[in-house]
Image (cartoon, rainbow, N blue to C red):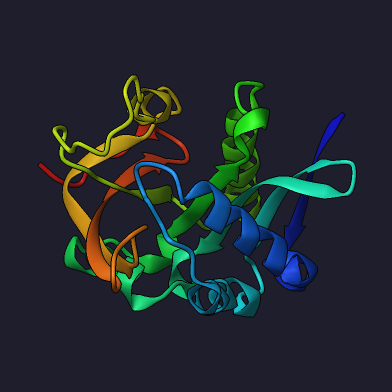
Length: 204
């Protein structure tokens, strides 16, 4: 039986390694093709560990963490994620940023994706000061030969959740792909949603 629990602030500390392991396992697949880097994971998750209002939504199968979804006030995120909002004159204090939702393949298709969004959106509402939720996702060329046959992107799911794809809002994050000699920059596009009025568009 799958159980979903939420942890915030200092409560997330014991689960940092579990989330790092999930990120490495899940992001190894298309479209991220992430080779996995424990040092990168420690640095990335340190941002969440320092934030008193960070959020982990964790799915457990018994004692095993099989899924994780994270969030953090954008004002507590790193500059790479903040800069696009500065560029579009969106106040950082109005945005709750969603990090990742990662779920082991054998547990997909049972509604946990919606549960992860529900829990993070409701948490942002309870904090009482956020107008927007946001996340970003890597974009790949449609003709990339590494795309698996039959792969379906998550765009339809995100649109159904009320998120709007931003036409000119991106960040660049470096990671090492499988088979690559070193880390390279990757472009990630932002998706935004108003917590009170549905989809939010700021770009063209």
